[in-house]
Amino acid sequence: MPLDNPFQGKGELAKTFWSLGHRNLLGIAFDKQGQLWTHEMGPRHGDEFNLIIGGGNYGWPIVSWGDQYSGIPIPDHDTRPEFNAPKVYWVPTVAPSGLIIYYGSMFPKWQGNAFIGGLRSKSLIRIRIEGNQAEEVERFTMEKRIREVEQGPSGAIWVLEDKKGGRLLRLSPQE
Image 1 (tube, helix red, strand yellow):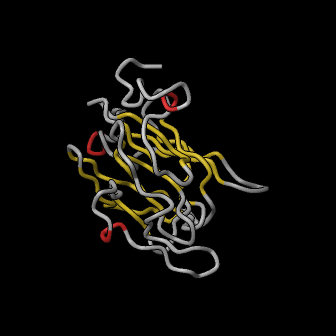
Image 2 (cartoon, rainbow, N blue to C red; image 1 turned 135 degrees about the vertical axis):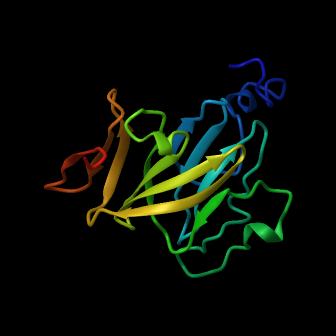
Protein backbone atom coordinates (compact mmCIF):
# COMPACT_ATOMS: atom_id res chain seq x y z
CA MET A 1 0.00 0.00 0.00
CA PRO A 2 1.25 3.52 -0.68
CA LEU A 3 2.82 5.10 2.38
CA ASP A 4 0.81 8.30 1.77
CA ASN A 5 -2.48 6.39 2.00
CA PRO A 6 -4.69 8.42 4.37
CA PHE A 7 -5.90 5.19 6.03
CA GLN A 8 -2.41 3.62 6.35
CA GLY A 9 -2.38 3.56 10.16
CA LYS A 10 -6.03 2.57 10.66
CA GLY A 11 -5.77 -1.21 10.30
CA GLU A 12 -5.18 -3.82 7.61
CA LEU A 13 -8.57 -3.50 5.91
CA ALA A 14 -8.70 0.30 6.17
CA LYS A 15 -5.33 0.75 4.47
CA THR A 16 -6.73 -0.86 1.31
CA PHE A 17 -8.96 2.23 0.83
CA TRP A 18 -8.02 5.63 -0.61
CA SER A 19 -11.42 7.36 -0.38
CA LEU A 20 -14.95 6.53 0.77
CA GLY A 21 -18.57 7.04 -0.21
CA HIS A 22 -18.55 5.69 -3.76
CA ARG A 23 -21.46 3.80 -5.27
CA ASN A 24 -20.21 2.31 -8.51
CA LEU A 25 -16.86 3.51 -9.86
CA LEU A 26 -16.56 2.61 -13.54
CA GLY A 27 -13.92 4.95 -14.98
CA ILE A 28 -10.61 6.11 -13.54
CA ALA A 29 -7.84 8.29 -15.04
CA PHE A 30 -5.02 10.54 -13.88
CA ASP A 31 -4.38 13.94 -15.40
CA LYS A 32 -0.86 15.30 -16.03
CA GLN A 33 -0.89 17.00 -12.62
CA GLY A 34 -1.36 13.59 -11.01
CA GLN A 35 -4.95 14.29 -10.01
CA LEU A 36 -7.22 11.25 -9.95
CA TRP A 37 -10.56 11.60 -11.77
CA THR A 38 -13.35 9.02 -11.76
CA HIS A 39 -16.87 8.60 -12.94
CA GLU A 40 -19.53 6.52 -11.32
CA MET A 41 -23.03 5.49 -12.14
CA GLY A 42 -25.62 6.93 -9.80
CA PRO A 43 -28.67 5.07 -8.56
CA ARG A 44 -31.66 6.38 -10.52
CA HIS A 45 -29.91 9.28 -12.27
CA GLY A 46 -27.20 11.26 -10.48
CA ASP A 47 -24.15 9.92 -12.36
CA GLU A 48 -20.97 11.63 -11.18
CA PHE A 49 -17.57 12.86 -12.39
CA ASN A 50 -15.34 13.27 -9.34
CA LEU A 51 -11.91 14.57 -8.45
CA ILE A 52 -10.70 12.04 -5.89
CA ILE A 53 -8.84 13.35 -2.87
CA GLY A 54 -7.12 10.89 -0.54
CA GLY A 55 -9.28 10.39 2.55
CA GLY A 56 -12.25 12.14 0.96
CA ASN A 57 -15.80 10.93 1.50
CA TYR A 58 -18.10 11.29 -1.53
CA GLY A 59 -21.29 10.65 0.40
CA TRP A 60 -22.85 7.44 -0.89
CA PRO A 61 -25.37 6.22 0.32
CA ILE A 62 -26.23 9.31 2.36
CA VAL A 63 -26.31 11.81 -0.54
CA SER A 64 -26.66 11.60 -4.31
CA TRP A 65 -28.10 13.68 -7.12
CA GLY A 66 -30.17 10.60 -7.96
CA ASP A 67 -32.95 8.74 -6.17
CA GLN A 68 -33.48 5.14 -5.10
CA TYR A 69 -34.84 2.89 -7.88
CA SER A 70 -38.04 2.64 -5.83
CA GLY A 71 -38.48 6.40 -6.30
CA ILE A 72 -37.60 7.24 -2.69
CA PRO A 73 -35.54 10.45 -2.77
CA ILE A 74 -31.94 10.59 -1.57
CA PRO A 75 -30.83 13.97 -0.18
CA ASP A 76 -28.82 16.01 -2.71
CA HIS A 77 -25.13 16.74 -2.18
CA ASP A 78 -25.75 20.40 -1.36
CA THR A 79 -27.65 19.35 1.79
CA ARG A 80 -24.51 17.80 3.32
CA PRO A 81 -21.42 19.96 2.64
CA GLU A 82 -19.16 17.67 4.69
CA PHE A 83 -19.14 15.26 1.73
CA ASN A 84 -17.14 15.88 -1.45
CA ALA A 85 -19.62 16.79 -4.17
CA PRO A 86 -19.07 15.72 -7.78
CA LYS A 87 -17.47 18.22 -10.14
CA VAL A 88 -20.07 17.25 -12.78
CA TYR A 89 -23.28 15.27 -12.34
CA TRP A 90 -26.04 14.18 -14.69
CA VAL A 91 -29.80 14.17 -14.23
CA PRO A 92 -31.10 12.47 -16.29
CA THR A 93 -28.53 9.71 -16.35
CA VAL A 94 -25.92 9.37 -19.09
CA ALA A 95 -24.88 5.92 -17.74
CA PRO A 96 -21.13 6.62 -18.00
CA SER A 97 -18.67 4.08 -19.36
CA GLY A 98 -15.07 4.36 -20.41
CA LEU A 99 -12.93 7.34 -19.43
CA ILE A 100 -9.82 8.97 -20.82
CA ILE A 101 -8.06 12.23 -20.23
CA TYR A 102 -6.83 13.17 -23.67
CA TYR A 103 -3.19 14.14 -24.30
CA GLY A 104 -2.77 13.23 -27.96
CA SER A 105 -1.62 15.56 -30.73
CA MET A 106 -4.46 14.85 -33.17
CA PHE A 107 -6.89 17.15 -31.29
CA PRO A 108 -4.60 19.77 -29.69
CA LYS A 109 -7.48 21.94 -28.39
CA TRP A 110 -8.77 18.97 -26.41
CA GLN A 111 -5.55 18.19 -24.52
CA GLY A 112 -6.32 17.72 -20.84
CA ASN A 113 -10.05 17.20 -21.49
CA ALA A 114 -11.84 14.09 -20.26
CA PHE A 115 -13.96 11.93 -22.57
CA ILE A 116 -16.66 9.63 -21.24
CA GLY A 117 -18.82 7.17 -23.14
CA GLY A 118 -22.55 7.26 -22.50
CA LEU A 119 -24.54 4.04 -22.49
CA ARG A 120 -27.95 5.62 -21.86
CA SER A 121 -27.16 8.94 -23.54
CA LYS A 122 -25.68 7.16 -26.59
CA SER A 123 -23.03 9.83 -26.76
CA LEU A 124 -19.40 10.74 -26.29
CA ILE A 125 -19.14 13.44 -23.63
CA ARG A 126 -16.28 15.96 -23.48
CA ILE A 127 -15.46 17.51 -20.12
CA ARG A 128 -13.06 20.43 -19.80
CA ILE A 129 -10.81 20.18 -16.76
CA GLU A 130 -9.17 23.33 -15.44
CA GLY A 131 -7.18 22.79 -12.27
CA ASN A 132 -9.54 21.10 -9.84
CA GLN A 133 -12.73 22.16 -11.66
CA ALA A 134 -14.58 20.42 -14.50
CA GLU A 135 -17.58 21.07 -16.71
CA GLU A 136 -19.30 19.27 -19.55
CA VAL A 137 -18.67 21.34 -22.67
CA GLU A 138 -19.70 19.13 -25.56
CA ARG A 139 -21.74 16.02 -26.30
CA PHE A 140 -21.37 14.08 -29.53
CA THR A 141 -24.45 12.03 -30.40
CA MET A 142 -23.36 8.54 -31.44
CA GLU A 143 -26.81 6.89 -31.83
CA LYS A 144 -25.55 3.71 -30.13
CA ARG A 145 -24.59 2.90 -26.55
CA ILE A 146 -20.90 3.68 -26.00
CA ARG A 147 -19.13 1.03 -23.93
CA GLU A 148 -15.50 2.17 -24.00
CA VAL A 149 -13.30 5.14 -24.95
CA GLU A 150 -9.53 4.97 -25.47
CA GLN A 151 -6.78 7.15 -26.89
CA GLY A 152 -4.72 5.44 -29.58
CA PRO A 153 -0.96 5.88 -30.02
CA SER A 154 -1.47 8.25 -32.99
CA GLY A 155 -3.75 10.50 -30.91
CA ALA A 156 -7.02 9.26 -32.43
CA ILE A 157 -9.91 8.64 -30.07
CA TRP A 158 -11.31 5.11 -30.28
CA VAL A 159 -14.92 4.42 -29.29
CA LEU A 160 -16.48 0.99 -28.84
CA GLU A 161 -20.22 0.61 -29.33
CA ASP A 162 -22.15 -1.75 -27.07
CA LYS A 163 -24.32 -4.77 -27.92
CA LYS A 164 -24.48 -7.11 -30.90
CA GLY A 165 -23.30 -5.42 -34.09
CA GLY A 166 -21.39 -2.77 -32.13
CA ARG A 167 -18.51 -1.17 -33.99
CA LEU A 168 -15.03 0.00 -33.05
CA LEU A 169 -14.80 3.57 -34.34
CA ARG A 170 -11.62 5.61 -34.89
CA LEU A 171 -12.33 9.31 -34.46
CA SER A 172 -9.97 11.76 -36.13
CA PRO A 173 -10.26 15.39 -37.29
CA GLN A 174 -12.00 16.16 -40.55
CA GLU A 175 -9.54 17.07 -43.24
